Length: 553
Image (tube, rainbow, N blue to C red):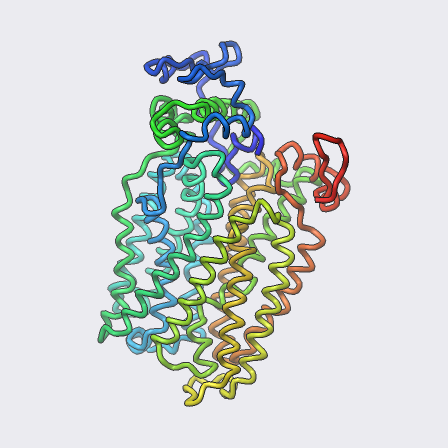
C-alpha cells in the first residue's frame, strides 16, 4: 500500500474542500503539549514523533510497520458500540426473513410467505433506499459521521417501532419504508466511519470485515427467530423486531479524525488518532496520518472538488471504464443468487420441509457457513486477487445453483406445492447441501468484494458520485430480486433457480473480459492501467521493481 492509498479512504466521499483552513492561518499545533512538531505546511521543518523519528522515515508503509509494530492498534473491537450498531441495523434487514417464516405473522396479516403481497413488503425496503441514498453522504459530510448515524438510526428506529406494533398491513409497509430509508442513509456513513477510524495497515482487513457484519447479523436474527417459534400468539414475531431497538444504545462513539480536522477541530482529530491508532502514544503512524489528512484536504481544495460533481465521472475513457466496473459490481453482487437466501425457508417448503423451526435452523446453518467463508474471503483477498475471486466465484455459484435446482426437481414434492412431504427424499437433502456450497462460493468471492472493489477502481475525483451511483444500482437490483422471488416461488416453485443459474454464468464470462486486477496496485499504477488501450491486459502484467522484468500477475 502506498502513501496515496493510505491517505485516501476508498469508501469515504471527499470532504468539502471549502472548510479546509490554510496551514498559515491555523491555530498552534495541537501536539505542542506533547513536545512534537506538527507544523505540516511544506514551508516548515519535518515533524518528529516522541522517539525523535523524522516523519519522512515513515512515508513507506513497510517503514511504518517496522517502527510502529508494537504501538499501532485498532481500539474498536468487534463488541464495541460502533460494531453493535452495525449488527442491529443489519439484524433488522435480516429479521424479515425470520418473521416471514412464523405462522403467527402469516396468520396475523393473512399472508402465505410467498406471492405478490410478500414481494411488495420485502421490496419496499430497497424502493425507499433508492429515494434517499443521496441524503446519507450529504448529512455525513455536513454534520459528521457519528451525527449522521444517530439521525439515520432515529429514522430507522421509528420504522422498527411501526413494524413491531403494526396493527395492519399499512403500518407494516410504512415501517418497512422508514427502515429502508434509515438503513440506506446510514450505509453511507458507516463504511466511512469504519475506514476512517481504523489504522492504514489494517484498512483492507476491516473493509472486508465490515461486509461480514451483515451475515453475522443475519445469523443472530435467524437464531432469535427459532426461539420465537416457541412464543405463542402475535408476540412471537413482534419480539423478533423489538430487539432492534437496542441500536439506540450505540450513540456514544468517537467522531472520525478526518471529519474533525476538516472542521477545524485539530486537537480532537489528533486525540482520536493518538488513542485509536497509537494506543495513547504519538507514534510515526499517528504523525504520518495527521500529515496526510491535511495534505489530502488541501489538495481537494486546490482541485475544487465538490459533492456530486459529475464533471469527472465519465470525462475520459479510463473514467468511463472505472465507472462501468463499479456499477457492474453493484448489480452483480446482488443478482448472484444471494437474495434467494432471504427466502430459503420458503424454498425449503417446496422440497418437503414444513416445520418453521427446522427451516430457520437450516437457513441458520447456511448463513453460519457463509460467515466462515466470507472471513476466509477477506483474509485471502490480497493473496488471490480480486479478478480471480470474481471469475471463479461466479462460475462456482452457477454450478451450485444448478445442483440446487436439479436436486429439488427430484425431491418428489409436486411443483409449486406448499404441503409438507412425509418422507424426505435424499434429493431434498442434496438440494440443501448444494445451497450451502453456494453460500460458501458467494461468501468467499462476492461478500468481501462488495464494499472493496468499487472503491478501489474509482478514482479520487469519481469516488463520491460513483459510490452513490453504485449504491443506487445495488438497491435497484435488490428491489428486482426481492419482488420477483416470492412471486416466482408461488408460481414456478424450484424453477426459480434457473434465472440465477444462467445469470451467474453470464457474470463469470463478463468478469473474465472486463475485470481489472487491483491487488497490490498504487493509485498511480491504476491510473496508468485504466488509461491504457487494454486495461484488463495491463492489469495482468506487473513490473518487478528489483529486476525490471515483466511478470504475469
